[in-house]
Image (cartoon, rainbow, N blue to C red; front, side, top):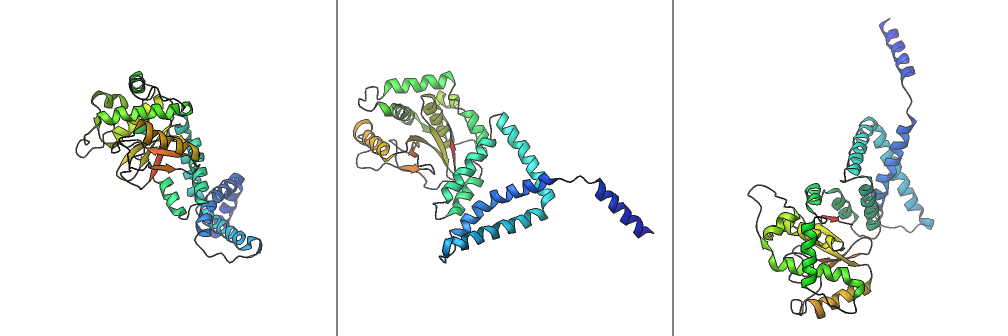
Length: 311
């Protein structure tokens, strides 16, 4: 009698349950998003048997999709809940200017694009998954539209490199170099309070031109952005430093190299190399760290764990 009641209760429960076909759609979409980078990693780390029409790679991708689909279905309830919370966080981030849907799209696209050519795609994934330290505080501290920051940046551009002829297309880069020269000539390195990570706003650093590496990077990025340049911050694990976009062509690099070594920083860069990075889109970024005496000076650390670009 008890057994029959349990069976009847189960049937009633099944009838009352609402079918959710969108669950399967969400799981499948998530499967594809995970399967693509996983496939790239496996593809680049196994021997290619050179089968016709790359059948081996097709079978590999299908195997990856099936395996991930099984795992996701076993954890469906938890995953759906996590996705819901994630979407809420992204909506909040999109509305209030933090990490939102557009940021996710850009990160995923750049990760997949980089992995297609990178011999160590695992490193790309790690760098994308690692959060940029104090990201929200740093973005808020880069007050490029504050009048004090803007006026200081303008002062630097009137003080240095005003009459460089023949390079009008690189006006923003030249003015960014003027900002670098002014800040570099004044900067005094001072550590944060013991046991605390202090993030100084750009307007704070303008008072005494003192602080640690992230304070310098924030001020430099704010001033470069204030005069129309495109800066980004690089996180290396124990250090943060700024870079500036100089272009995406070999001709841009050659022109900037000549300007630095033969016109703008001739003495400081004499006999030295120009240090830069090329990102996944082919854009060229020049080092503006406080440890360098000229744009493109030596990196304090070659390791890159994250990049924060101000478009």
